Image (cartoon, rainbow, N blue to C red):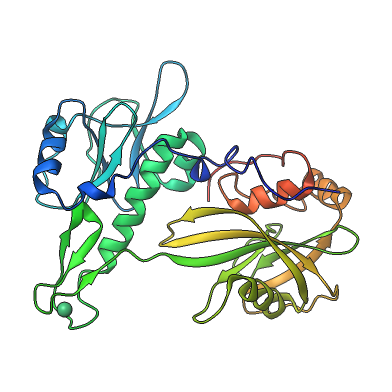
Length: 315
Ligand SMILES: [Zn+2]
């Protein structure tokens, strides 16, 4: 019997691992401290633009977030996000720009989180996901939701203030549930969304609605999407998923019925797989393995009991 309590959830997905960065939120409103940190010679800065950063390969073959001292960073009026400090006292900032700098090392290249999250260290992936999440929120919250006035950035990127009505707006995170549903025969339920290509199957997922517990959300989503009822629900791990602002809450869920009836709106096709079924389907190419960065891959792998076959990162 598989044990689902995921004590090693940090291992394969750098987005869930401890990043070693102290977000040091108490400094965000301290302009003097921020100015001193910005100009300190050890401070490291990277540019985020449209969800992308520059990454670079080092001599030893690892991939890094391309960071520079602040005096080498491109000038920017505002949109400077303070992300935190590390154990050595190094401060990290992200600059939001309209475009990535077209410069620096020949080997540096732009990458989004789906690719970079697989390649970067937990520290760099953690810095990137923080910056991308802030950028997504900043870009879509330029106006006050209370009075409609244009808002201004504050707290080193973590607040937007309304100069007209005084409202403070904070970055939003939308909870979403993602679940590996299994039945009494220890088969897993995987579905194909209507817009996915043939052969792409994954765990079911959906957004938590207002006034709903996450356990209720798991049961509702599974019932709505594939008509299967769920009893026991157990939390496994979470993953920030800023596409644009989700937090994926990963569960195992035990089905109490097995007949599948897909909704046809979100899910086009769903199937129960035994481990042998899934292994054979991977081998024949009938089913594509999920993207390595996703918590879906981790949930399936926990049930599967061994690493899933890998595949490329191209979306
Ligand atoms: Zn306002």
